[in-house]
Length: 379
Image (cartoon, rainbow, N blue to C red):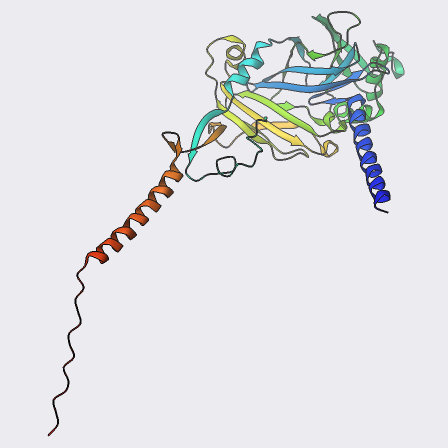
């Protein structure tokens, strides 16, 4: 009976592990139609996903610029990326050095914090776990009107960039089909609000530098510029994602900025706020006229709940903020824990005091008791 139960337990464990493996493999091969502020579409029967996306929004009150860099993984040697924009946009290649400068400017400050009493990981409270090191040309329409109009096309490095206007989401799918890409039905539906709002699109064909090579690694940044009186970061297409999404966004503006709402995700958190101090390089050039940098992070555990785009607004104040990472250390004296010296010293004082009291008592002269006189006789 015991052997049967053990065999049954082994089969259940095997079934659970197999299910987890199938789930993990499925997540690796599933196409990633959503990637932050746009949609990434692989060619037919191929897979491509965005493993990391970093974006910078610069807004000076009348004009917005978005610089983004995608890091992709998959087996596709080409893909299409579609991003909706509220106004007609110009597109150029961005400077990769910008993101290195941003990382350095917003890096947390590391400080040492001492504690007196031992904590987990300090002797003698060693648990063995150790410290935690752990830390995106169409056919003609009805009546001869073209529902999709190509207003500009250019070659930028490995990118073939087309700027489109569309009055019908199906027409955008036709354009993608003409260029060898299949527009998923879910993405077609998600584009409808942008069509109703008469937004335009930047459609990019991505291809590696070497023909036949899969798209992998960090791609060259793209730099978009368009006019707007209200800064926006398109996020609606991210609702198509099948896995939790994470947003990391840098905002350059005259003042500290913040998202107007959570749009279906967790509460946006500021990870850095302060004035740009760079005097040269890509960051100083982009920040000219918009010296305040705000870094925002947000999690979307259930992407299907995303109900709009991030509208950015001025924060209540320009309070600076920088994350501080503390390294906790046990306070020591000459390599010996201070608490141990204190405890041992305290015990030594107590023992010494008791010993002195005993010695003093032993040295006191013994005074004999006074003799008791008998009472005088009565009568």
